[in-house]
Image 1 (tube, rainbow, N blue to C red):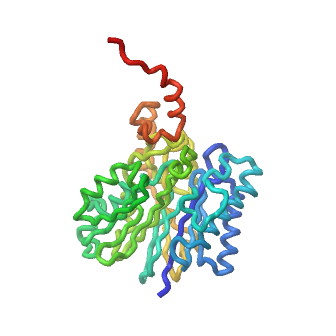
Image 2 (image 1 turned 120 degrees about the horizontal axis):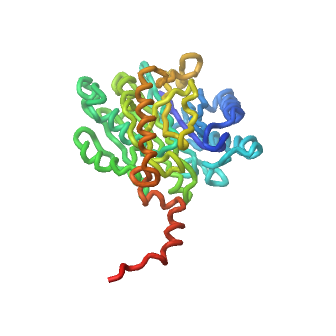
Image 3 (image 1 turned 90 degrees about the vertical axis):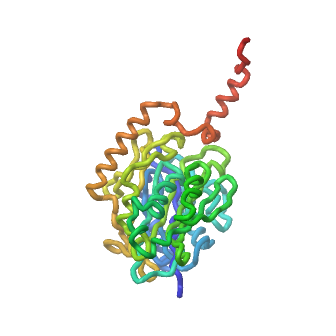
Length: 375
């Protein structure tokens, strides 16, 4: 059987009024290029979204993960947007996430964020794509733990015989580039000991323990690790399969109900609450202190390799529900509270994470003025 692959590839290649949002011409060009790829049968279906200053491409195809043609398609779209629109219009941070000059077969390690999942379609295959802005891949650690390992969030872990067997988590060491696989519930404490260190260990993929069926995939790009300096937020994406042997849609979404603190926000250097927002109501446009960090949820059915939405391939806006107003209000209060601390930790991220900002220059300037205390 031919497998279906979902590839979500995103980049910040320029925006209006600082880090606020892309120009509509950028979205239109991406749609035009993906339409051509669909008409030529290179891909099965697509959707173009934006959140904050990021543009994301959701692509379905049958070429598998890490396919050079699919990655090259996304890279060329982002490059063309940059050269034809962002730079001529002098948009802010034009081409920011394109850290290399030429495509080398895979966009991983070149700047754009990528999450991909290849699977055999079930009788019915609901899929949710999450996209966050003004944060890093660490934003998914607690969320994915809640969804796939915490029975207080996901009732199916207790009462669904298939989920009861647990899940296998792939955790990536961002500094070493290595991966360890841990099974829950047996190794839950080992998992937590790693993913609690969010600036180094992030969850990259999750599989169902019973049959190794792919359940979720998250982007793991850290721009500062690639560039060796601060070049912008990492703004991660996440794919999660739902229902029929996986957590239900409602269980998946409930993991976002209480906004947790994530690194990023202003200049990528502060902790802020992850706010679930609607993309149809334009809640995905950032403002306060370049944030706060936020996340959108796009829901589809996958059928014969294509995205099926409410109308054509238009996804369900899963955070467009009055119940999420409480979460947004709570996130706003947390954001205001965190800003009362100014540049004092824990509002500002750890010093190790600030090595890519101006802090090293400040320390260098003051180095000779540090003296031993007088006896």
